[in-house]
View 1 (cartoon, rainbow, N blue to C red):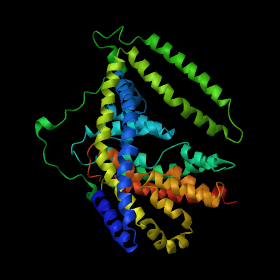
View 2: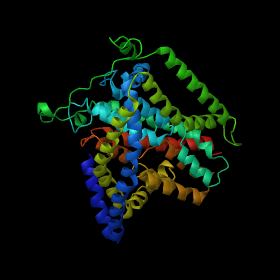
View 3: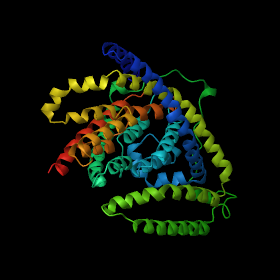
Amino acid sequence: MLNYIWLGLLLLAVVLGGINNQLKAVTEAAFEGSKTAVMGLALPLIGVMALWLGLMKLADQSGLVQALARALRPVMRWLFPEVPVGHPAMGSMLLNISANMLGLANAATPLGLKAMKDLERLNPHPGTATNAMCTFLAINTSSVQLIPASTIALLASAGSQNPTAIVGTALMATTVSTAVGITTVKLLQGLPVFRPRPTKAMPPDSVEPMPDLSPSIETRDQTPGNESPAAPRMPMLLVFLLMLGFFGWLLARQLGAREAGIPPFTHFIQSISLLAIPFIMLFIPLFAALRKVPVYEQFIEGAKEGFETGIRIIPYLVAMLAAIGMFRAAGGIEIITRGLEPILRWTQFPSELVPLALLRPLSGSGSNGIFAELIKTHGPDHLLSRMAGTLMGSTETTFYVIAVYFGSVGVRRVRHALAAGLLADLAGIIAAVVVCRMVFAS
């Protein structure tokens, strides 16, 4: 499907650019998109990925990832029945989803790429997305988050009287988009058109062996030669309680500094988000050290994966961002908006939101620019601005996520992942308008 979409974007960009006399802008957009893909996204991402994949290596080697996966076994087994409960992918996906919910984008992407790499090790058809990969992508593209921090920041910087007013509406809209995304991906995976096509058998020496699933914490404690000093429970418990007490004190101090006009729940989530990364960055190495893991050496081993993954996704980012930039520069978004006007009038969907709705699955920076323009034109507390903010908080840049996540493991046949992601975006867009009319229309 991506083959046709990418080719269609290029074809329409050149044809429309020629008709609209915008070929120069189309050419410039191609080069600018390629530059942004490498210099603005891939290279900065490498450092962040090295940090988080190094920490993930420690969490995996210490058994923390497996323990987390077992704690949420019922939900994860229903979502990902093809993935063994003790597999590292379970823990990676859980951490990615948790980071997304807290709005920790700089942690969520590296953790998501780590999860995709773990899922690829279970893939019987290399180059083709598995059902677990598609489900994981649907959850990511439906934008599960409690606080849309960047959207709130844009409203606040524009002088909104209540920039956090969209928190409740965004939460309701993202719940709808997530439910639609998961339901759609489960329904589509059984259709014949989306079944994985058989691939040529891989030579025996080229197939990566199944990973040696790390034993559980309980099993490790009973391993011969590992009974006593390897995992002293009392020091681990004492360290954990001390850390919990320290961060509890920091949280209490942060909660006491709530500014006027910010709802308590919103401030609580923002405070948790502020403290989450420092807590994780300290807890994981300490836990691993108490489990007798050589923390520095294992961190370096995990960090090496960040560089390799960052280099691998560059071609996919260049292809997608260049095509999207060309299509936008040619005036494709404006033409689609004008063509949809009769349907918009019939459905009472605000025409001012169409450019944002069309660009949101394609480009994060582009949709931020349109959102900022809407705020400037109508004011930060206008109904349209709040609809746009809710839309931003309940949808995701689907094409970017698919290009990065699948590109990191060399998946070219995405099967039903794109359809499920776009339907989740559509559900989030409709829900954003309906919910905001119900809450803010008066």
